[in-house]
Image (tube, rainbow, N blue to C red):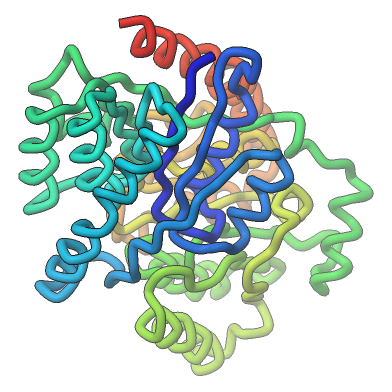
Length: 385
């Protein structure tokens, strides 16, 4: 029996936490016992309890979203003075065989603790790391890291000088979870006040500037000038940016009113019924201004049989075959986004065809079964070294 200590940086459930839950669910419990460190009780701890997985709370603190400040760095250093010995204690007490750091905020203290106890450490990188953070990561990598698991080639690019350590394993989902009936589609549209014959362009994810939500709102304004029977559906809320993010969201809503299109745009807030929400859409937009490391929302939309229109950088550019199982557009260019959206609105049969191809691709390339096989192989490789 091998014991793995997973280190998680957030207490809510976003993309990285969903991936970690999928990994834990796929472990052979007869051979591996998972333990998880979390920063606080919350939605994520509830999910762990449902899986009967033991977890331990080690508060790692709150930090600014996006670019970190000097104060963030100082706070992180001070907390690491506590987190390193606390993690060492857990490793020894639980007889841990592998430390699995699931996100950048766990890398430093998790790696140091693993090095001191003589245990291998895996980094699971869910973001595109750059700048000072990349410098620190490269120093730590030379120090003790066994493997660097990246969710896309875009994420792996900064670590290209470590080919023996880097593995790219794309995230995955259960495709069948996202296949809803026509009844589901009709019901959710009725709940949202959307007519059966309306063409719906949707967005699912954080309401954040780097996600390009403002670009999609600008595109909506132009689309609605020529396509009347169209609705835009924004699903999600502000997660990590606090008051700054709330102001950004509120400003977008204000603009839709100023432009007299608020009756055509729906902000639902956070939803827990994403498969049903996706069933209401005809097109899913992933208009990220900054490169997406991967985008679970993208493959969820594809699994739902929707035509996905995404920015042509980062993970989406690796996933989508343009004009076959999705559409790629230049990032930060509302007019090009408008052009592609109007093409799909004017040719619904094309949108349906692309959506069908998208679902086939997800089933073939991004299924949980394939993912768990690849991940299990990685863990076996490390634990048998």
